[in-house]
Length: 297
Image (cartoon, rainbow, N blue to C red; front, side):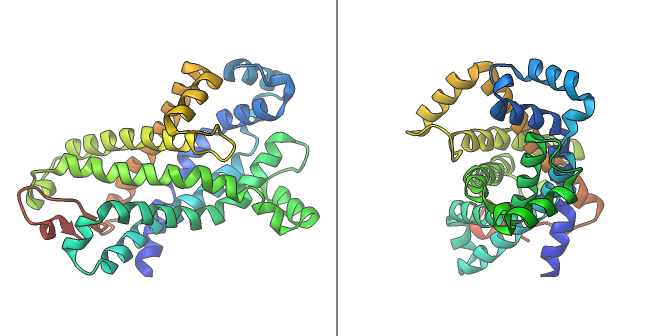
């Protein structure tokens, strides 16, 4: 369990730094969704109207619950993924079986980790949405959280839990699973010694490339699996979202999410390196050696 705590400590700085930076965009997007006066405006024009009416500080409404919420969620998600992946590798019974069933292990580990992480995120997300939709509701995160709990009950903090996990679990599945397979592809044909001797520049290139591809996958899965999104096959859902947001708007959303995911993986790498944290379990399939040789801890 101490290893889980260490992983949570290592990964905690990831999401508040990346999601916190996106607070102005989240504020504008939320206002467009809930304010009829802004419904037909673009992100840029709606942002200008908010600044004109409330000042630049209006774009930072909800910054505290966003940062603290994703601080908790990020630590729990990355640590939880490492923890559950290790549990499923051991449950597989052998290293060969773990490599053979690695896709199922990635999917299950990411899903379970995200589910528990969202339990921590949901109250902060409820507070953020309330503050953004009504800046006069409370003076800040603590007072807003306390007001919701005291006037509406603690259960109201989890009223949006189901839509949240419908969005976040596909996001996490795409984020971790695709990242794992991108690393597997990049390391294919390399011996453990060759991987260990890679220069920092090459390691960063692999991390960036894997993060970008994983980010686009996470963004697509998150967009087409939103609880309130369009129905039908995945391709049809993505096409419908594209028509609703416009090609430019949809692409901008995908790029933003890809940037978030890439930033998280890069920060995670450097925080782990700085703290000399032990590597996690890897179950990548080797080409030039037996499957057992691909599992490292």
